[in-house]
Length: 280
Image (cartoon, rainbow, N blue to C red; front, top):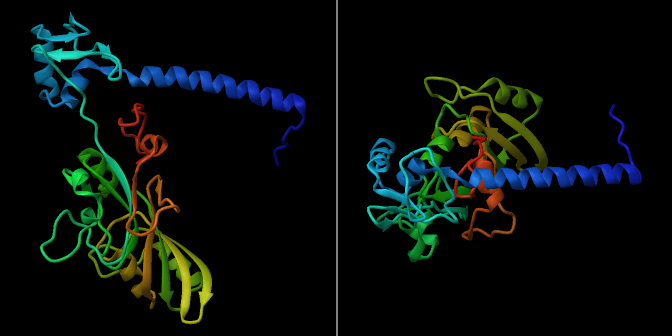
C-alpha cells in the first residue's frame, strides 16, 4: 500500500508541482491553439486540403497582410487575419449541445406527426443540428446534438466501442448469474451475440429492481432486449453517459446547454481550442 506524505513540506512540494504543471499546460495550450494554414482554410470551407494547398502556392493567400507560400505555416485562429483572394476567411466552428431528452419525443431532426428532440430547441439554433445516435421515444436521458459529422461518426462507429451507461427499472429478480451472463455476451436474437456488457444491481423494489447497464454497442432496442433475454422487462430507461459525456444533473427533462470546454476537450474536438486526442 502506498504511503501518503502529509505536512508543510508535502504541501510546498504539491504547490510547486501544481505551478509547474499549470505553466506547462498554458504553454501547451498556446501551441495547440495554432493550426496549419491549409487545415485552417479547409476547415473554413475554402476547398479540400489539396485545393487549398494549390491556392497557397499560387500566392493568393495572406496572413496578417503578408503573402504566404507554405501550407504548413501555423496560424492562430483567435489572432491572425487570413485572407484568400482578398476576402477574409474565418474558421467555421461546430456547435455542441447536451440535451436531457424527455420521454415522449423522437430522436430525429423532423417528423410529420411527432415532436422531435430538435423541437425542444429555439428555432434560431436548430439549423444544421442532428442527434448523435437515438434514444427510443419512451427513453429519456443524455443526448448530444451537434453539426459535427466526424465526431458523430467516431461516437457511433461500431469499431470504437464507445460505452453508454443506462439506469433502468426492471421487473425481474436478477442475481450474480445474470451479472455473469451480461459479462459473457447475451444472445438477443441477432446473427451475433451482444458484446460483453456490465450489469450492476442496485436497490430491490417491490416489483423488481434498479440497475445500471453499460453497453459498447448501439443495437436496436438493445438494453430492453438484453433484459428480456434474462426474463426481465424494462419499465423505465434513462441514459446517464455516452463516452466521456455524463448527463448534467442540473438539467431537467427537456432542457439543454452547450458543452463545456472540458467536455469538448474530452471528446477531442477542436472547438475547445485544444485539438488533443479523442478518447472516443
